[in-house]
Amino acid sequence: MLSYRFRRRWLSEDGNGFHGPIAVYIICKKTEREASEDRAAVRGQGVPGYRNLRKRERQMNYTYLLECSDGTLYCGWTNDLEKRVNAHNSGRGAKYTKPRRPVRLVWYETFETKEEAMSREAKVKQLSRKQKEELVAQGPNNRNTGRKDL
Image (cartoon, rainbow, N blue to C red; front, side, top):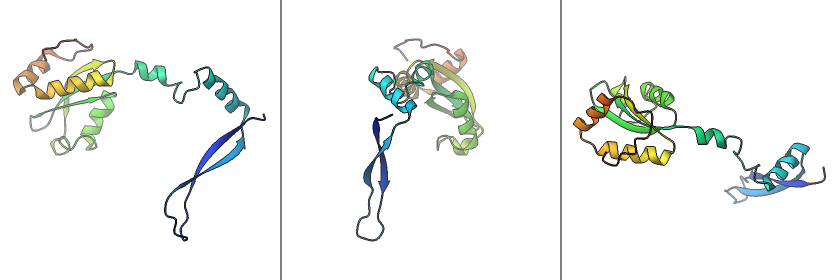
């Protein structure tokens, strides 16, 4: 194939007074696969991460409450609930939960977008402990309720 693409390389010198990266563009031949990806990009299908776009669209976001070993409640949001709870229990979660392990998931709510989950997290954090305990008593909510009062 006769088409070419630019490849970016970063170089730095040690001795002659230059102490930062510079961009060098190297022309190299495209493979047939790369050329077909470029043709797909022209049609709007070759955007980086396009293959995972539908996966990301279907990915759920969660607002959750954890009960720490000292009885306190911690609120957060994530897009992988099981992984996040495991991170909290292994000490790689939030600073707040690290000395209060083990933590236990007591409530969560699912959302389609991270913005909705983050907004709900902010609202839950403003609730009193009694109101948070009422949420826990209701159990997990597998859909966005759309309620404006909480």
